[in-house]
Image 1: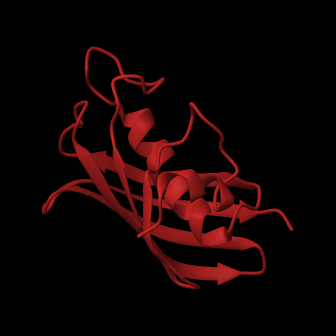
Image 2: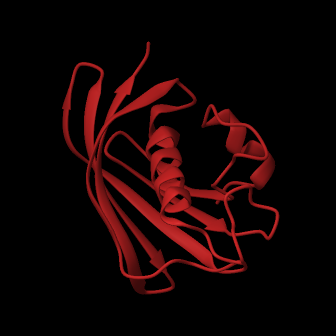
Length: 129
């Protein structure tokens, strides 16, 4: 587990737009993160994190694998959410490399609350060197 104050070593985003509290594991092929949604989160509306917040959490989980390099989302394939999380709930997000060519990476991302899967997407990420 990694303390919150170390997260910005692994992602380019800065507060208040950090959507990861903890990096549980990161390696060449995958990243596993957690994020407990605070009431002060800039995307929270009426106590709920919208789909755009789930997308940002997914993108930052992918960014954690790249190690604080600047990256861009090149494509989003079919984001689906079965429900939107509320303030205080903890997202557990996993991003796994499907394919990687040069600096373009295709990653499958799944987000859970506890054991309940709540969102899935596939992101194409371009990482700048």
